[in-house]
Image 1 (cartoon, rainbow, N blue to C red):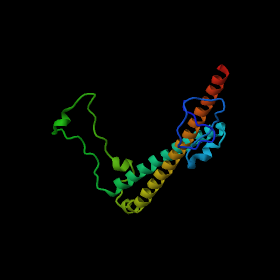
Image 2: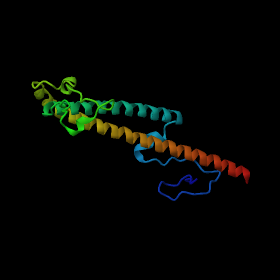
Image 3: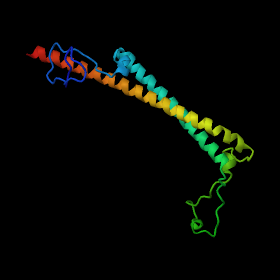
Image 4: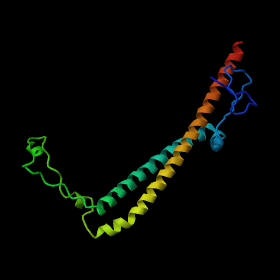
Length: 172
């Protein structure tokens, strides 16, 4: 496992042979130094909290995206599915595999009233902005997760290298 000797700067070549005086130096990038200084237990707790925040933000993103789809459907002239026409070739299916197209979909989704179009048109930009803001928030959370993962990985690698160096020095 490559290790960095005490006093060496990030970017220098890593050494392959561990020594007993090797120190654990986390070489995380500048934005993740806060993660590098965090105790291991807190780092793991922070990762779990970030995971929970990502799940909540992704849930809200899906809801806003669905609401945007409904607003677009409300302002467009998409007709309900037509009932099955027996004269069409695809209508010849009979038996348990034959299913009628559901009717009243616009009513079911609450987008059946023409007077609703103006309201839905006015909310479209707000929904688009909210979706963009949620995407940016999720990108930030994912970046934080990558930084925390990097710091944790480096910490664990360094601890393993130190352990091997101690074992190697006692074996010699």
